[in-house]
Image 1 (cartoon, rainbow, N blue to C red):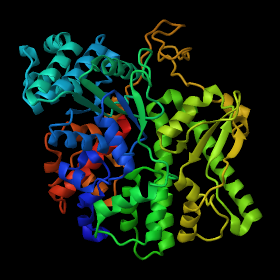
Image 2 (image 1 turned 90 degrees about the vertical axis):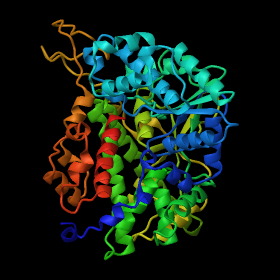
Image 3 (image 1 turned 90 degrees about the horizontal axis):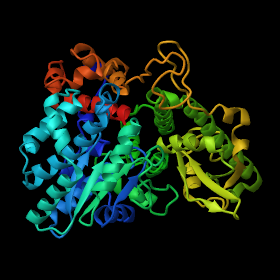
Image 4 (image 1 turned 135 degrees about the vertical axis):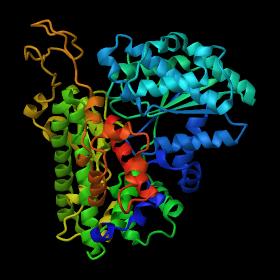
Length: 566
């Protein structure tokens, strides 16, 4: 089957092409880490005293940075004691919000149990309470994530608290002979469950002490910290998203090639640089682009291969952005208007560069920055969703007097390249585009007032789309409304987790060969895979599928599920 489809399975078994740090071994992580000033700066922030919020869109390297800091501290007894916990399964507890009155208590206990389990497992200290032994904690964590709540767990929920957890960490510090601890809390942007997110940052704020410095990886836009948590005061915000215009950007991306791919690939330097820019400061995207280019049709010209890869990348990032409205349906209009806003920005950049090229010819300098004044308050969340999806990079604000504040944005470079918005040219010359991107830019951004980028009629469309009452069909009048104001029926929101579990595997972005493997296997939905005791063994029953390729398919399913549930 694989031969008939013309697929080289060995290509997919190269872990060098793995995009997510979650699936790399500690040795691979250490060997392939691209060292740079930017990397060292983030490492310093993670290891130093004080609470930090490491912010950036998906793929910018938050998990990678945390795992590197964890491994560094584990190997050096003079550094802080590291505790690493990921909360990427948080949405599996979402159903409790719909059917359990103590949902927040369950979540609170789940967070503390995950932290406690890592401390007990790694540093061999114990609670002096039988219900909080290592085995009970692990069973509780697993069962809560499988929606197997049982009243027998009430003792754990009522017993574990912040003070006890701090005490456990202090005992680990004493045992290991270290002065302080860093608490690395990965995937902490619980954006699809606001109630949990607010509760999480209450825990984050409360567990902080002189000896415990919590660090959380979050998203730059939609993370909501709640009324009791204040960014800047309770934690310092540290951006991990690298500006493509930074002087260290190309050297940093080059290091990824040197460290990870070495002799695996032979790609023209101009193509590599173009892919670096098209990745828009997101290392995971760069690895994905290289993988796509290497796997593209060798019979096509370089221009055709590049066009295909960038076109595919643009389709994927826009589709991923639009899919937000499937997960958070009340923000459908924000996503829809945001899509128009983004492409209006791209048209604006294209128009400016074309006019500038006609005027200046050989002295042409591109402009990719749009400075916007008087942004409507209703549009703030719309812009945050675009930043969240990595489609819009916001630079530091520039003030022109007390009443004139200019916010500067750069649209995704892959979209600018695809739309030929950088230089007026009939063809597609890789080196010419790279030269334009590398050379100096115009000193001042393209300036526009917000209502000149999208019309007043479109701004009016930005509103929360609240679901109607399932009993009488009346629209809700407020977000968070518990009962219908007309018939009095309880208002129940749909479960994002249940929707994800019911997703057909045939709808996932597999290759043709992978789709054939899934069709032959017994797995039909996401839930079928997640509840299976040995998915890899089942997939290996399909002809031409070995353990490594089966693992690739499982990782792809897990990756898609995690992306959907984040």
